[in-house]
Amino acid sequence: MEVIYWQIVVAGSTGVAYLLGSRIICVGVAGAWTLWTFAMLSYGPLVILQMFSAWGSFFAIDAFTKQSRQLTEFKAALDGFRKDDKKALIEAKEKGRFTLLSDSSHYEYMLLEMGRSDSSIMILSGWISDKVIDGRFLRVAAQALERGVDIYVGFGYENSEGHHEMTRPAKRALVSLERLAREHRNLHVGRFNNHQKALVVDKRRVVCGSHNWLSNRAFKNREQSFIIEDNAAAKAVFLHSSPLITDNPAFEI
Image 1 (spheres, helix red, strand yellow):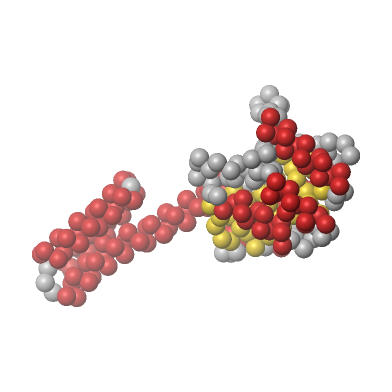
Image 2 (image 1 turned 60 degrees about the vertical axis):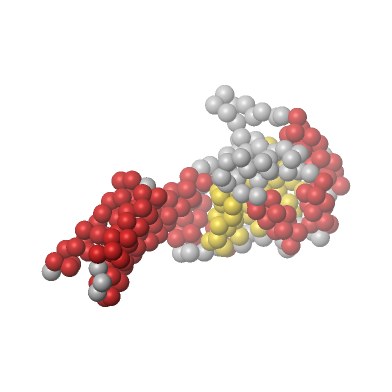
């Protein structure tokens, strides 16, 4: 029984270090137990048991904490989505139908999906900028439009005073999109009070997170999005958001 109690102490101290301290402190505690074990114990099975108590506790709590933190970040990323859309996306994520997308991967991923989309792609962002709506973006978008892909672009986050700031980079981006829309009527650009940050591809895949798809290329802060492979969730977001784009055109053609 003494051995069991001792392992409870080892596992408990490791867990408390993580929960009340930090991940680094927990690693330090598990490492300290490792040094103590090899210095004080010589019986092989007991050494293995104690290593399992220390590091097993660390990895178990670490996995649970990451999963919990990830779900919290995901729910925060759905700010601005309709209640039923949020529910569908959360259910899809909990079923494991997702992968992660981080930082500079967003721009390349957006162009990749635009380049291979079959029928439609919708991009929702708070702001736009010519840092993203650049020559490469416009070329890929033009090629998709020529293939018959419908592209929907929505932006226009408003502050507490109901104002959306159109910076010079935003105005230049809008001019480029207007020029492209005059050549391709299947490009729809809408400006409205939008806080959703999402990419919906062919109504079967939706990517949502903290990233402003149409304005951010600097990545001064950590950006993470979730790629959700779920037809029902993707269709719901598309059907609820695309009318906001078509009913609020950013310019007249």
